[in-house]
Image 1: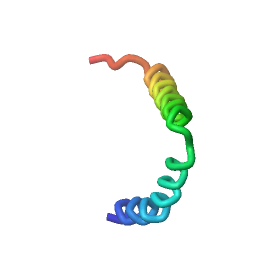
Image 2: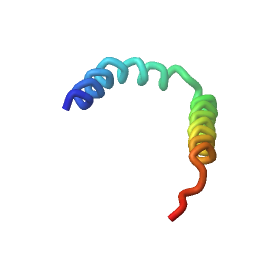
Image 3: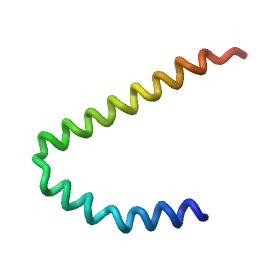
Length: 57
């Protein structure tokens, strides 16, 4: 419950800034930024998987 309150409050504070930023950025560069974010998540997941190694069982 504590985490949900924290996430809800953070969203209430950050969403107006996010909408202003989304209106300010050109759609092409927004797509580029989102694609780079997805690549970052992919690399992070690959490193975690390679570090833990294959599961045996």
